[in-house]
Length: 598
Image 1 (tube, rainbow, N blue to C red):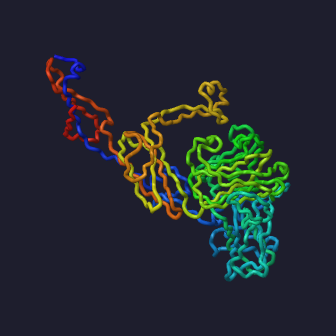
Image 2 (tube, helix red, strand yellow):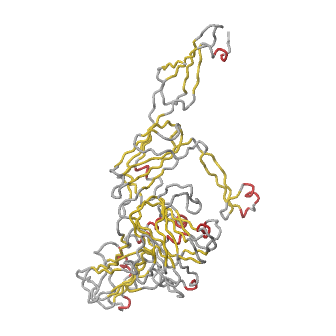
Image 3 (cartoon, rainbow, N blue to C red):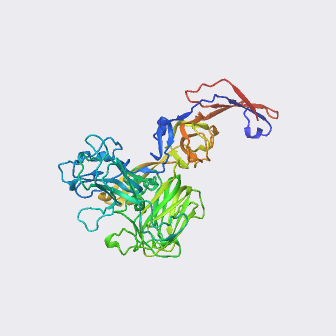
């Protein structure tokens, strides 16, 4: 007869039989083919047949070599060509092709006043030397008489057409016969200031350069010019910050961003332009401007900027170019009255370590250390040099601002060698069904002083949400969208978002073969890989990543049978409970039983 199983639960012994199934290997392997589709800062990180490699920074940069990565500004009547001349324009680009066997020659039938050529670097660079290289062969000889001019790109105020102001940086003292002639650059007339790591010299051994003009001052038979080279003082990381403008224009960048008080709702922020202008490598046509006043707290006063470089770099130099009232060589005509003194300001740095004391809106939730506190007496160019610092964020602030502050550019330079840390990240990866992930393994070159770490997230799926927009791009509710006239309605967008099964980022997997740190089994996964170097001379190379996984035993559910299903009263009875997993069609059940006494 039947019995109440709950009543017998206290007096019977129950044995559970589990059907054992084999572990079915379902590893996922990622190599360079897959890594190429991951998210990474292209150019800083490169995916090649060798693996995932990282850029090594040099002590100097030839600013002419990558002109094509930048945009020229139309100047005068010769269009936006990087190299332009009124004579033999067809060969003008040869002065920048990095090939000393090719050259530009002026047409000997053209008048001498047309024997000039200009080179636009496409952006302003901090450079310490300009070099001109001539051929010396039959039919092509060095110019005997010439002058070389340079300009940062400051426009001529009031001119009908865009024009710029040049200054001569040099000419040969005697008739030139050399194939290579170099001109050192300098900036003079700097006032005093005080601050840690600050070069206090009144003359700096560099200048800001965007345009180079080579001009013949006398006729030379078969005169030709092979190359113009500009030695930048290093790689300017500001040029690769993912500013809002670079992202909107789909320009190359290495991630990160920048913001200033214009983009924040803070008391005293006033009028102002965005932070992009400080990092755009343009000193001639755009500036950073803010109108603020001292509110007793620098955050509320509003004269500050935060820069997130996106990765952790080894930075050893910062050059800051504000417009200082009555001192700066750059004056923007009708804006002469909008010049601040920049009398007291600070620079702070962060390696990205978290802090619960920082304002997440202003400086982000990060810990900062003071790099330099500057007391200025009219200086308009600031060159900070220091031992390499691990830096992800840079913050400058004016602690007691006056009404107007304007600044042109902030240059941030990487020390020679590799960065401290870079990351690559996958998209959400389908595991092809539920997988029980056991561990993560990787292969590559990991020199002493370097390491690789992997973080993971896992989840089971996504939810679909519907978003409603006006024609101006603003998002509104469904009810508000339906209430709009048809001409005001923008697109309706279906968007997939993660459901609540997704985990946060795991603890780092610090060694290959480490046990998987995210919840499992799951159907989806995302991976983030860090390449880390303690030594600037070496960097790891990642070749492959393996996710060691099995099909979960109960991926398709389980069923159970208990026997016998009847028992006599008032006597001890043993029961067997057999659990049968529902297996995928590809799995064969082995007839092996594990008996577990309960």
